[in-house]
Every structure is written in C-alpha cells, then in structure tokens.
Amino acid sequence: MRFNSFFLFLSCSGVLIAILSLSQPLWQPAVKADAAPFSAPDPIARGKYLVATAGCNDCHTPGFMQMGTKVPESEWLKGVPVGWQGPWGTTYGSNLRQHLAAFPEAEVWIRMVRSREGLPPMPWASLHAMTDGDLTALHAYIRSLPVTGSVMPPALPPGTAPATPYMVMEPVMPGPPKAVSTEQEIPLQK
Ligand code: HEC
Image (cartoon, rainbow, N blue to C red; front, side, top):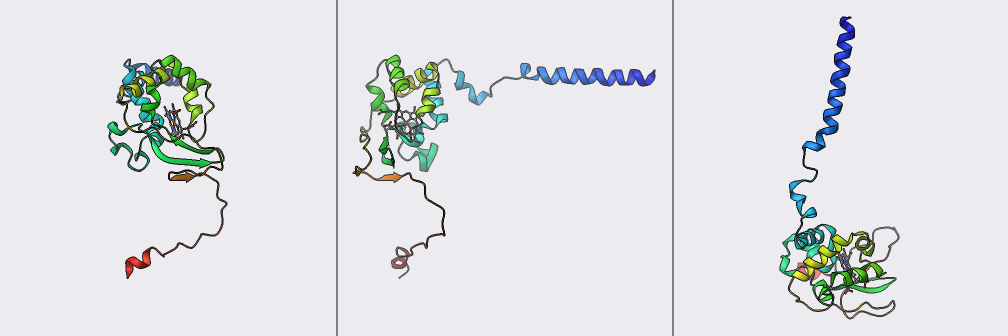
C-alpha cells in the first residue's frame, strides 16, 4: 500500500512537472525585449530593424563589410561603387535611397520587387520571401532617410570591362598553396 501511494505521488508530480514545463512559455514573453522592433507598430522602426538584421547594409552601405555598425546610420544604404563580377556580368549594390526616391507608393515598389528576377549576389529570394508588411516597413524606413549619395553604375553584361574596382566571384579549385610574393615587402625592408 505504502509503495502504491509512493508511486502514485511520483507519477502525479511527474504530470505536474510536465504541465508546468508545457505552460511555461505562457508566463514568459514570447519575444526577447531587444527583438521588440520585429513587431513594432511603427513601420519605420520595423524597417530599420529589418535592414539591420537582414544584412542589407553589407552590400548597400559603403564600408559596412569592413567596419560593420561603426558606420553611422547617416551613411546607410548609399550604395557601394565596387562591382560584383560573375557569370551574370557585373552588378553594384545600389544606392537604395536614390532607388526608393523613384517609388513614392509602397504598393508599386512591392509589385516591382515581387516581379523582379534580379541578378546575384542580391538575395532576391529573401526579399521575395518577405511579407507585404515587411516590404512596406522597408519602404517606409528607406524613404525616411535623406536622398543623398550618387546613383551606382548600372549592371554590365558578361564580357564588358567595368570602369570601377570589382570583386570576382568564381570558384577556385583546391591545389598546392601559392607562393606569396614578397616583392612589396623588400623595398620596405631596405
Ligand atoms: C550580397 C550583397 C547584397 C545584399 C546582402 C543585399 N543586396 Fe540588394 N542588391 C545587391 C546587388 C548587387 C544589386 C543589383 C542587383 C541587380 O541588378 O539585380 C542589388 C539590388 C537591390 C535592389 C534594386 C535596386 C535598383 O537600383 O534597382 C533593391 C531594392 C535591393 N537590392 C534591396 C535590398 C535589401 C532591402 C536588402 C536587405 C534585405 C538587400 N538588398 C541586400 C546586393 C545585395
């Protein structure tokens, strides 16, 4: 008898623990406080959050890949005049402030984004996967920035030489390490 009530107690407390752990999320906030802008009602704040978390600055903000968040917001999304070259030709991370200036209506811009099969390395699929709410927020945030900076060069077809610096995106086959040239160091040592 004693044994039975002991096991009954054990199984009841097991059920209680299971219920407690299942219902725990109800007592805790579902989203961490610092992620609040994700659901922020202000589309501009939400758009800024999306730009910061979805990596738009990496390719559309000068110096961001090198210096990250040390680049002030006043420089964000002004475009990077260094091309990305691959089998598609050469593309440039546009000045999104200038680009959005041509799209006062969010719906028109969203329609353009959704129908555009653009070129690499722009993550078009990521933009296409966003909800209309996310794209409206991006539109609101980018259009809240002053329209400054130059328009970036247009995309070039394959085989056309760029007039700007550019990065070549092509696979390199593995092989023995190449000898590193010391030519540039020798004059410094003399
Ligand atoms: C890996 C680099 C890279 C990242 C990250 C990136 N972009 Fe781009 N983006 C580009 C390039 C390159 C182009 C030009 C592509 C083309 O011509 O289709 C471009 C083009 C665009 C255009 C079209 C602009 C025009 O002038 O027609 C929009 C809008 C855009 N990007 C928005 C974004 C947003 C919003 C994000 C963040 C969610 C983002 N991009 C992230 C590289 C990038």
